[in-house]
Image (cartoon, rainbow, N blue to C red; front, side, top):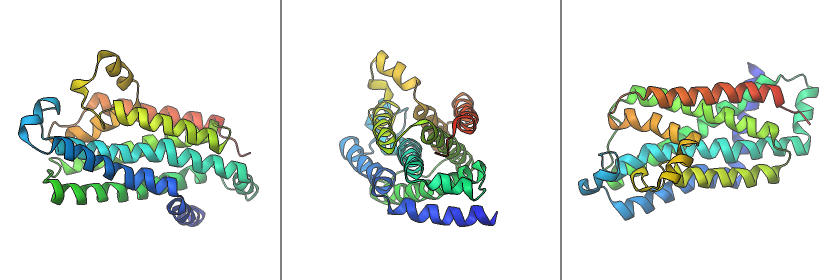
Length: 247
């Protein structure tokens, strides 16, 4: 436990020092919020394409999902592949550090960064755009925890199987922007084409957004979406343990 705590503290400081982490987890979601709020406002007449709610109310939980996704597909894979290239993982192994300690530290750091990003979004959207507070805060917290665990596991998996930092960064950016545009964090699903719906349904972020949005907007717990998110987490953990490479 002491080893995990020390490693987590070091990881938090390293994550914060990486510009790509700060930009994609803390800055870009805020920029997207400003853009979408500027385009659609938070007026009731736009509700028909935003699941029957005001646009900003729709986008706040969606962008919390975007923060979580950016950690999983951009920050974590780049961080872990960079460790492998520099021989840090090899030194961890030589010091008898278990693979679960490495995974655990990444999950704790992911929670810390995701919470910071979510707080920034909510603290900005509520006073600036009169966004609504979550209707079911307890369920939102559960959804947040499940979503962070799922995308953390996915990020560790990508970091485990991708060979280089450049590959991790390239694939991560592609996944991030595809999911951002098509999963509900960009144009509302109601204005997308059938082909875009098909791609959206194949992205993990789509189900994370639904898992967060439904209790936030007062629609209750989305069982189907949460089961998909949970399934992604389980599969990613098992595959990460199987294919993780120290060097």
